[in-house]
Amino acid sequence: MPRVSRSDAEAHVVEAAGPEFLEALARGIRVIQTFGRDHRQMSLSDIARLVGLPRASVRRTLHTLIHLGLAETDGRLFRLTPRVMTLAGAYLLSNPISTIVQPALERLSAEIGEACSAAVRDGDAVVMIAYASPPRVLQLTSHVGLRLPAVSSSLGRIILASLPDDALDAFLSRVELTPLTPHTIIDKAELRRRILKARADGYSLVDQEVELGFRSISVALRRLDGKTIGSLNVGLHSERGTIAVMRNTFLPKLRALADVMREQLI
Image (tube, rainbow, N blue to C red; front, side, top):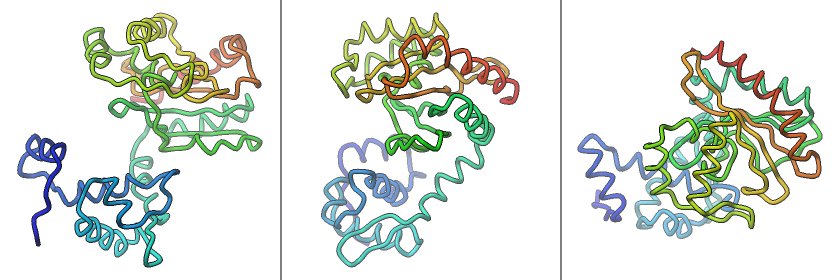
């Protein structure tokens, strides 16, 4: 098999990971990750361009994914199949956080009539591992597996608030701040102040920094030993609830749920 040239980023990863690192597996995962809401189906050339790999290498990867039932093609365009969900399902079924929190979020969502979610940190982002919403809510942008910037979301900021000061400062020194809306905080000093306030308050409230017209409030999800392992959230369109409603109505319910969950997460 011909040797595939590496990008500088790939070469750095391979060098750091050592001889046990499987480049073929890594490239397969990269190909899967290129698909999403804005790239539901793509040509071979599109995928090769997005992952920065030669067409021949991407063609072999897609051939493998198709034979595993993870992708399909009409001869020109490639798309993922529902079988890809088994990859996420393996994590969700083996993770006690999601299996315990999901039914609790469904009960809370039914009680308050708003969308609720739980997330864990993954690098510079947070990833939703549980999500529930009332039948009237159709939120195409909120779902299990959704990634949000940790610095701009209430789910992320309350997790960052649990970091020691030196770890928080190291994170903020290297993270890139992207203005997602006109309200997104992109000043690192102000962002640090907001995170420290969330630490002191015991919750984070973010208003239209990730999505215009959408606000959310989050509390930390902790294990029995007190370690923060994720966050719990209520999010809604701004016309459905003021900031005062978020604090006075939803925050006590989130805190009560977090207390219950803490007794179950060992």
